[in-house]
Length: 278
Length: 250
Image 1 (cartoon, one colour):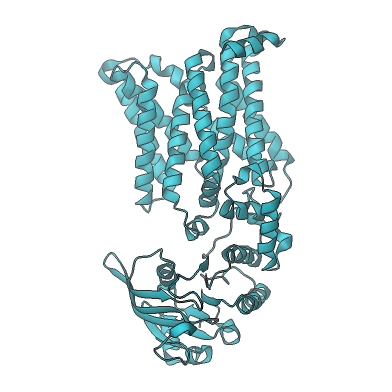
Image 2 (tube, rainbow over the protein chains, first blue to last red; image 1 turned 30 degrees about the vertical axis):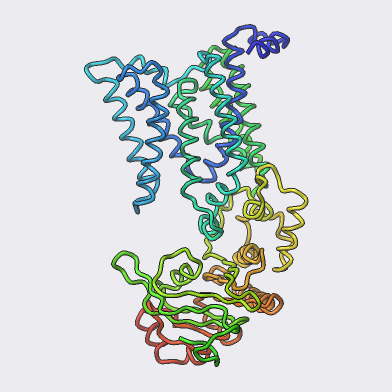
């Protein structure tokens, strides 16, 4: 962290004078590739509604964590999200209902349970507001370390499994004909999304988190011709939006998560209008 | 059932032998008592109405479906060794929006190097060699979602031919392919089976091509109904009964 602070001090940028901005800036730089990479697979696998539901389940986890008096409710949320995603995968593989119907079932149940627990015994909901909006300026050096660790894990997972994941997402029949079992790889990926979503919820906020998981990949699809460009543009868009959004929020005094989402939406609009008609 | 004139003893000339094969899923019997011998170098077509169990039979041969009975392979010069099977699954088209090229698809299937980092020059060369077998070198940079039905089948065929198998199994390769494309594809399969000395087992609803391309036809409807040369099967009473009763193609 000392090294990072020193680097920031060398940069002639006003907002990087503050320690909390230095932390937030580094967190954004770590988060962007994380969201950029996973976003490509979420969009290809048509899982954008699912990742949204995971955000809702993370909130429930946090509520459970708070009520149980766990010091860091984030861990309870990670656990709950992982259980939620595993239960969802299980039910989906054994049900003939459409995936979006099942997601609707799980998502609304999770939110209802979360609010129910949070307000149990006449409790006030106000303390949970920060999970709805999120505050990246509150990120601590320890959390940044954790974020770095998740980034390393996801990168390694990506290098080993992205080929299989891509194949199962774009053509399940072809994947299974080549002996790739969709089950395990998909489950690990789902758990990875659950962990990322839950960690990010207190910084980005439940209400806008999904834009980071969907928009980089969706924008990248508008301009990419192959897989390499798809991942590259997705990560670049996420980085651009992260840095631009954080700066905008600093100078205008708005929520950083919302600003980042809006920049991403702008990128999507531009990529949509410049895409080649096909 | 026994194809060809080799009687019950198969020896080296028989590369796939299915005896007494039955498949049940839960309490539902999908296939019952199938016997099928396929000789090396033959093109055998499985026909039958929808839900007759054709795909299930292919899956059993591929080892993706549990079954009762015996399925055995023998390859000349490779006794007791398991035959290499190439499989072209029944294929819906790719999503037109997926930014995945044919080269990416091959890299995902064949390479350990993650395709999102780009396709290496060596890999590209390999892909070109594979595509050459189906006269599809020009498809390498096309996105998979923009391929026509015939092009898609050729790409999937090229994938199934790496490594060159002893038996090539194709599930409905002609569905979604236009009339001209069907002939091109069947000519190509004919050429491939002769140049690589492999056997082909395919399911199809296109009965018109059978007399010209297939050596043997097996009519299946949850069990074996009849079998023989294309002319024999297509002219049989059983064929008319099966497809009239089910309101099928004829």
